[in-house]
Image 1 (cartoon, rainbow, N blue to C red):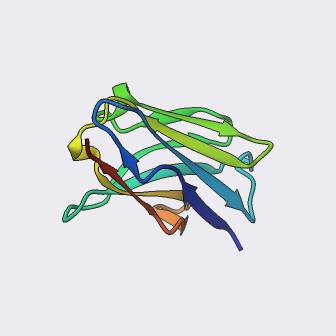
Image 2: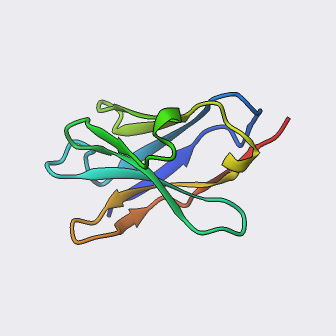
Length: 119
């Protein structure tokens, strides 16, 4: 059974950097052809896919967030970490990590963690 768990601060101040870590069990983030995503959902809005890190370590981001986003990984701990810089109130959201389903969408999700941007 694949499980993902998000962790990180629940409150970030404007202009600071949001940092969230996803810990994976039941699969390896280096498994061939696996992709690991971050998705968020602001209050009252739709899910927004943010970006992924591939099994190779390559990353890709949605264009609107590319300039502020990075994803890194710790293969020894089987974790990957999202960093979003220069946050504003509009970055308040529930953040999810997930494994990409090869046939489309995501097949395993974390439970999500609420990050509030507030001074």
